[in-house]
Image 1 (cartoon, helix red, strand yellow):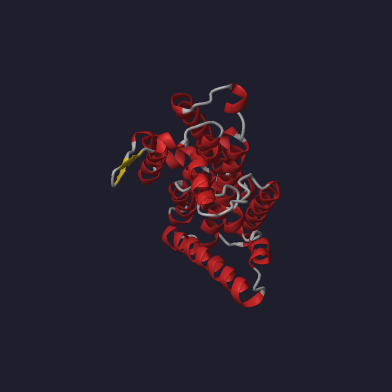
Image 2 (cartoon, rainbow, N blue to C red):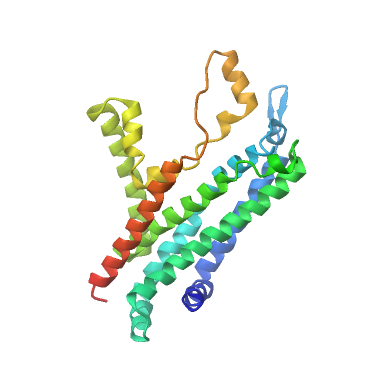
Length: 278
């Protein structure tokens, strides 16, 4: 496995665009810390997000993982390009000629996906601890390490999404078209959501249960928005008569759905590779 992973990392690091995107991704992740220095002037009021409790443990685990998820498109570009470049530069055929089996080839890609997800999760974990200990009002260890399931959800989110990107890269074979396919799939799921919600079921609760099985929807459902969880927002909602009954926890059944999709994407990728004349 080390040999397979070393081959892929060497390919990525020798590609200038992939190298720049990887570095940019982790630099952008670091910008989450800049929220601590932000200040918004609204009329006579000065609003500092850091003073609203977003860096308090255990809430901060929810906040940082939710924000960090939005940066995953940078790594998605690398995953798609990593696969597309195999066809463009003929390295896939050369790897097979050199004795690498198709199963080993795909495994090397999946190991890279796992490594990216693990590294990103570890980075977010360390950054969150630093921010939390610097700004949180609560630093007792039993509070600090509460809600770590958001990190698990973050890792599963990345693995599921990157597996989808890997499958799309194998299916389409060209970076630009593969990224376009990802965007089109996003709109397809959105359109199906609307059709089911307004024309088929006409029941929001039932529709939400059905679309929770869609690939991108199931991935995005792992970490819900954290903003309405803030005490300030809840207080404002109570004052205007809005009762918040939203569940902010990690849906463990949702994790099983994403893991199932990950397995499906990898099996489909392998089937494509086996069937395709390279």
